[in-house]
Image (cartoon, rainbow, N blue to C red; front, side, top):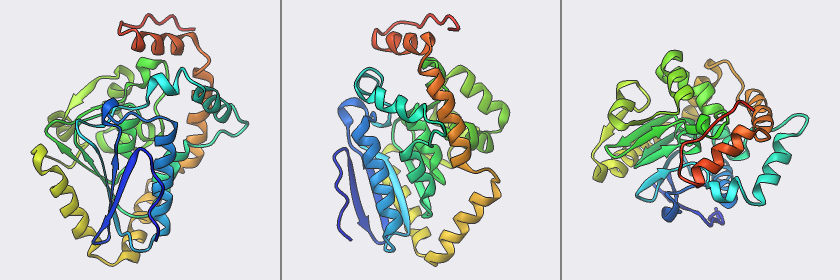
Length: 267
């Protein structure tokens, strides 16, 4: 198949393993509107290519993904587009999230650095997470006066338990790779220099198995979780649509841009 047209990601297919790399290192791979669109494009491409049997997603050093590009997404014209989607009668799950979650190929997140906000969400959408010793994880949405996407609500509690998930979601604390391994967020921690080899090696072992059985195995795990991400994602998007209108959210963004502690008022 023809390579997908990407601006802020790179894509490589080798031995039935697709390697997707977020590539905005100057902003720690923060996601702007085009990067979100690229994620959706590349995972729709993966889904349509029968030559792909497993996926590795990572970031260009020094980060995995630092979340949304706040300057562009929260203060630019993209904000109005996002609010229009979130304020619909039946708001949709984030399109990039839907594309990753709908992908029926096994996905491994090779977390090479900071994975916070939607970057942590992206890692949670993967089936397996392998962390570099430099990795950090944080659901920092509460610091912006927002709720997390479906990863934090649906997947995180299954991995680390409801109590630990609540602690991470309610505080917005950032944890290191060792703590992530201790609580079961990642399957292993490896030396930074070995991360991609470890992730690709695991993906290659997975890809050597029967491809149709692999896809059905992943679907079985999805069904066993017994909750529909699209339905739940509609609630999340609706909640975000309301929270985007609050003073607290505007204060969360302003305090981030001004590099000061936020002063929330519950309005």
